Length: 139
Image (tube, rainbow, N blue to C red; front, side):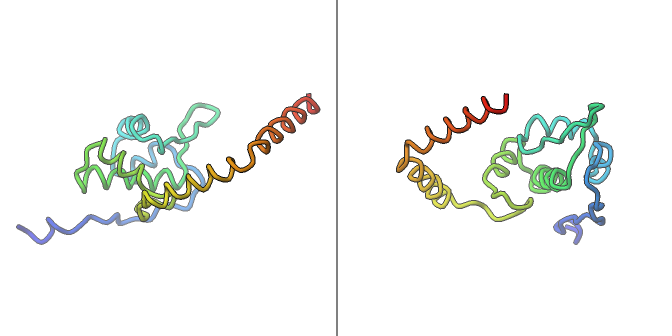
């Protein structure tokens, strides 16, 4: 076994400081083909680049980071696509590679939100009515 087999490959580049990246740029940065990116868009709901007025895919920096994380999971960690998708779904809202969300904490937050609305059922009705009157006013 050579010394290079167990060393994780770190990208020898920085992601350029740009607002948007085209599909070819993202493919070059990740070292994959553009058709792979298009396929990953269908498999990973979090990966959804915007489209320009001419229909070109425009990836943001967080999309590029997500592509690099997906590539790491699939190629380095040897996850299946389904395994990588599930791993991505369990991650928090932070950047790719962030700490995992604890299920107990997530359930607690959901319960707290449900309690908030259960205490004031008329509040949602009032807000809905106000929004409807605002829409009528703006017409």
